[in-house]
Length: 148
Image (cartoon, rainbow, N blue to C red; front, side):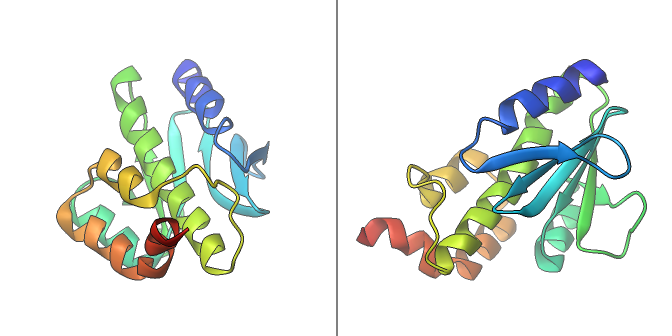
């Protein structure tokens, strides 16, 4: 799985504001404004930091599994078993990224001014309940771009 994980890392590190660091249990973690949004392990595991509500929605929709070590936490795990799994892994990491960027926007920090949240959510094409959850939680941030 190293090739798939390497491709995922190569893409995610290009997103504005994303930095990488070695993960304490091996692999690479992704940081946005000093906070981890997720990490990858060379064995094909992608772990994401998200809220419990979003976690529950991801699990209900079968888009991720409970975290492989901390199943009751707000973290989820996605397993990359083949090249075909890369787009879904990237989509989930993008959700974690969007979640973090919007949280920062709510505090007046805009690390990715080119990001248009509504268009981003449409592109990610998540199930209606998850999409609605993100839109409701970050309504202020989603409307921020429209008023600028």
